[in-house]
Structures are given as structure tokens and as C-alpha cells.
Length: 129
Image 1 (cartoon, one colour):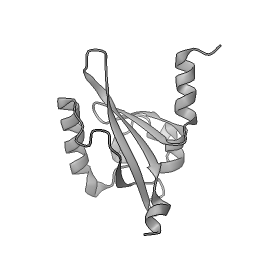
Image 2 (cartoon, one colour):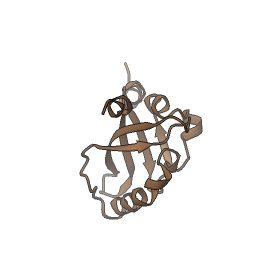
Image 3 (cartoon, one colour):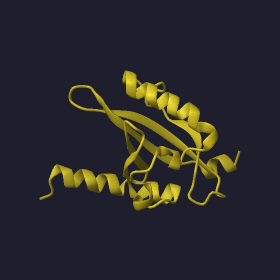
């Protein structure tokens, strides 16, 4: 019989949405198979890298302001509501729109450990508009 950690890993790897976990410094620590498919970067390429890997340069200042504020005060501006944004694909010529929702990951004492993002490809939907 499978233990909870093994089951958790299977769920993370087999979910159809991209799951990205970054530590408090904004470095990618978890990157599931769907994230590799969506953004084009393998786990090996993504793990340990800054979130700048997938954040367009023009959006980085606002992203890091919000990220750092959330880590400091333990609250998210959007309270987990999904937002539509541009993202970077490994193939820089590919236009990528993603719907992302964010959550803070806190330890049992309420201290922020990092942030998890769930992302879904919305490129085709945006192309139809």
C-alpha cells in the first residue's frame, strides 16, 4: 500500500495543470510534468532557477514587488483568485498566455515557506479573441 508522500508525488506529477513551488527567495523547488509541457523547460532546467525563467521581463518588477510583500506579510493581493498573464516559453518565439492562481505555503507556526502557483494554458482562448 502506498504512503501519503508517495501518493502526494503521484498526484503532483499526474495532474493536468502546471504546479510550481518557489521558496521565499523565488527559486523554483518543485516543477511537475505539466509545467514542463506548458513552459517547455525540463525539471532539470527549471529546478533551482529564479521564477524569472517564466516571467516576462516587463512584468518582473511588479511580480517581485507583490511576491516579496506576500512573503513578508503572509497575505496575497488576489487571495488565490486566478489571473490571466503572459509567460515565457522556452521557445521564446511562442506566445504564451496562462491563467495562474497563487497560494502561500506556510509551516505549522504560520511562517511563509514559499509560494505555489497553479497554471493552465490559455493561449488558444486568447488567440480566438
